[in-house]
Length: 318
Image (cartoon, rainbow, N blue to C red; front, side, top):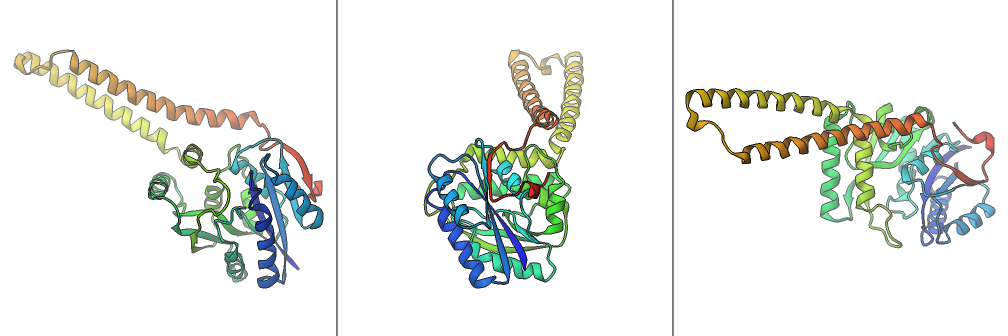
């Protein structure tokens, strides 16, 4: 019997975690009885009783694997670390505990996978969210796809089913802050997009607030392209050319028509603050890359685990 692994990161989801487990079990029993479900929960040091519920579930069901982090390492690190323990022939990379991505699509994903599709990705064609968030997401995908050398399909998140060989290619990445959807897109393979409606959260509070979404967006941009630094180089040369042209114009004007020559401190002040602002922005971009390099070369652990349950040490993948 083939196995489908499903990864579910969790953080303070006491209201949703049991329903996620039971709903997924029911779907596999009714729609995918020929497959074994391996459900891996990666808890990010929840403090609301989520861990206690997960312990009960894992104690009653040995096919449920549980990874307990020592602290909150963020959704991407926790998700990628949970992926390491997947042993299935195919892997559902991300099944949110809040069920905003519908688990009922997993049987359809599996059927496409059986036909030879190696990456079956869900695309959030309709989102039950505010206009502002939809606009920000659209701008983000336009920026990333215009700067990178491969395409991240708009509205495609981590809710994807990938073949075992795709999983192996993804696991070869050694990234201190893995942008999982970008990694999957970068490795290639035969891909199919399945649109669906992203439901609004019914219980509990979303952990993806605006600062966290901005952090994820910047991670996606700086992880897969050097275009920001290339833009700084081009902008620097362009500003230098403009300054030289302006200096030539000012000199000629002063010599030929003194009344037309720029005067006063206003021009100097505006130019100074404009150029200083650009320099700070460029230094900030450079700092993002330096910080990323610094974190990578320190070679610290992606996640520090407090405990593993129903996981054989031999099944851990580097």
